[in-house]
Image 1 (cartoon, helix red, strand yellow):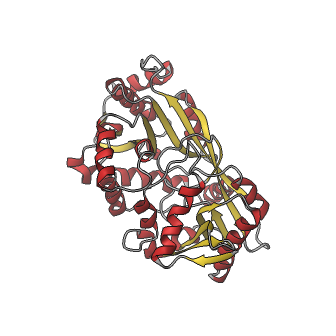
Image 2 (cartoon, one colour; image 1 turned 120 degrees about the vertical axis):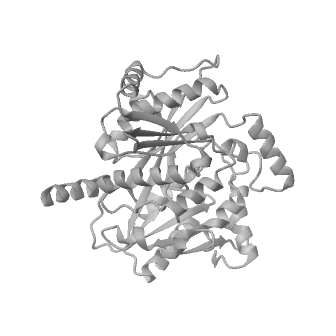
Image 3 (cartoon, helix red, strand yellow; image 1 turned 135 degrees about the horizontal axis):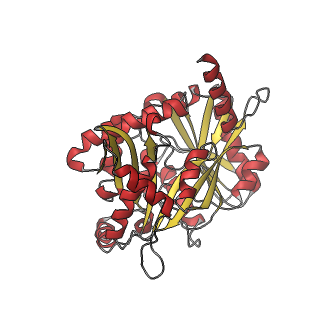
Length: 404
C-alpha cells in the first residue's frame, strides 16, 4: 500500500470521490457537495488558514486503487488553548482493513510529530465545530447537515490504534408533528414558564431578518462571546466577519422565523438558530450543483423536501441563565411550527457530555438522544497525562474560583 499526498487535480478528485464508492450501497449516507469539501482545503475560502495549516493524503493499494483518505491540520489558536500543542485529523475514510487504517493514522501522527504536536484529536474539522466533528458510534440513520456519518468499524480502528474518548456529543431528536400531522405539544411546564416570562416587563423577542443582518450578527457575537468566556475560559471568540459569511452562504435555505433572539430592556440576552436540514435535498444530488441539479434543488426546496430542522447554535447571556428565557424562545419557535406544517422533526445537535445544563434543557423539551458521536484524543507524547475534556473543565473552574 502507498500513501500519496494530495496535490494534483487527479489526487483531489480521488479524495472527493472515494466516499461515493465506499458508501454507494448505504441508504443513510448523504454525499456532501464536492465544492464544500474542497473549500475546507482552500486558503482563499477557509479563514482557518490564517492561523493554521492542513495537509491530506489518499491511500492506494497494489492495483493503484484508492482505498482510504485522511487529512491532518494544525489550528494554532485551538492548539494554544490545550494543555499541550494539539493538532487534529479529519475526513478519514477507509475500506474495512485495519492495516490500511493504521497506515493512515500513522501518516498523520508522524506529520504532527514533525510539527511539534504532542497530541491529536479526531475526527475534527479544520474550522468551526458545527461541521465534520466527531465519530458516529450510535444512531446510524440519515444524518443532519454538517453531522458526520461513517462506517461502524471505524470505532474499532480508532480505539485499537490508541485513541481515547475525549468527549461525547449527543444529538437529540424530537417530533414536531405526529403521524396525523398534528402538532406535538411542548411539555406543560415549558409552556407555562415561557408564557410567564414573555409577559414580564422588559422582555421582548424577535426573529432574524436579513434586512437587519448586521444588527443580529452583532447580537449573536455579543451573547456567544459573553456566554462562552464564562463557560470555557480558553474559548475562541466568534468572528463577526466569518459569521456574516456563513449566513450568506446559507441564505438559500435559511428560514428567518427559525432564528430567534430574546432581549431584556432592548439588550440581547439569548438566541437560538435552527436551519432546515439541507441533507434532505443533498441526498438527491450526488455532490454536484450542475445546471440540472440547481433546478432540482429549487424544486425540492419549493415542495418542502426539508421536513427536519437542525439546531446549529444558541446561547444565553450568563446574567440570564436559569431565568427561563430558553423556554420562552422555544415557545416562539413552537408558534412558528404551528404555521409551517411541513416541518415534522427537530434535531438538537450537538451537545457535549460536559454540558449538563443544555442536556437538561433538551430533555425537559421531551427530546431524546438519537445519535452519539465521540471526539477522540491520541497522546503523541506518552509522558503527558490523558485527561478527558469535562475533567479539564472542572479543574479550570476550580482554579478560577480559587483566583476569585
